Image (tube, rainbow, N blue to C red; front, side):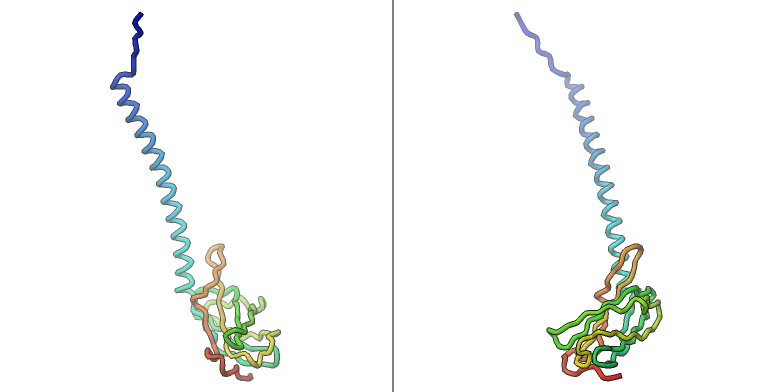
Length: 166
């Protein structure tokens, strides 16, 4: 007895191959569109953050002087268009001896185009501090950014001469 084997016709095979190719192309296009839109949004957000720190923050430590054994008075100046919502301050005695402090919340925010004089207490051996570094923090949208590139120094960067008395 003879068995008849039948396959699919070349026309049906061609239609199936074209159908699979179109379906696969649609899946790849959908994924690619979603991926590229996500990358674009991420890049836009990062660019906005970097541009805000670079263009909208102009920070200056105008003066620093020693009030007493554990207090330093600073004059902070914001010539930028963004409010500085927080400030990290570092006090250097020498290259290896550093103390960190934050400006008290009652003195912040430092409004755009504003100037404030603040006294920071609890600085160990304030009379030996040679250099003060200020790093501003701003808010862009819902994100808080530390703008380390716009930090400012006042004092002796060779760590030889202590700050003057007020």
